Image (cartoon, rainbow, N blue to C red; front, side, top):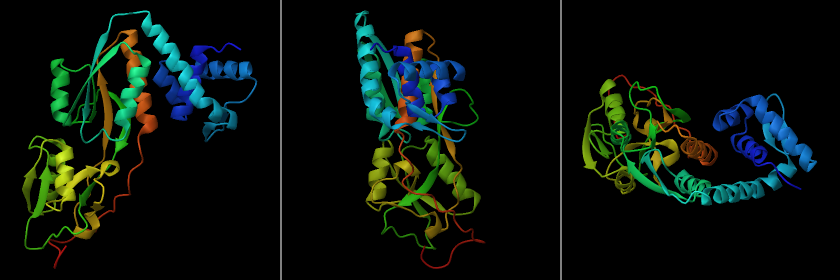
Length: 301
């Protein structure tokens, strides 16, 4: 039996994204073309791979068995194709420290499998610094939190934020809220302080670290509270917006920026976007919506 590589690629896109529409967008195709390729693959195999209803797209039992071999087949095909071009290419990727989590190893593995001749240069930094580097042409692509009113880029996922602190963190009514942040220019830090200022809660910056990893250590140690994406909250911390009466935080979007237009680069970007969407973990917990106060809460918070 000989399998069509494009049909296998269509199957993987539908299986990973659970949507014919998103699969078509990821592959730069149409929903109808994806459906035709999948149907031909199923006819070739003689079994149903995807179960589709008006409200749900999911793998069949045979599709679940075929999923990993299909990935291996496509990776082998991509390695074989890449070996025909001996010239190594560089791919300069920036990932915001408050965006990238458990997905990062998968992103890198998928890029390497997609194009073994690719040399990946990765930079971890705040979204604003990565955006500046991207605008200067120092990065080929960047995965960041959407900044300000900028509307370009491919939306990968929504992101929600919460206030986190160690379980034994103390916040007293007669003291400013102790905050940790990665830098004065950090967009997350600015959102947090603006939200506090809007409801009249005093704050004091007691820790500035180089990147969100250092901030996470400070919060876990009980030095301060800080804002994190709900899916990237430091281990052992708790969401404290309700406990301390802290204001809600606006959601944002995770976007992929790139100006690359050659076919190889566009394919690498599609691989990157699909891997991020597939392996993005769910939020650790729902953010509790705070109960607002008239001024300051009495007693210990």
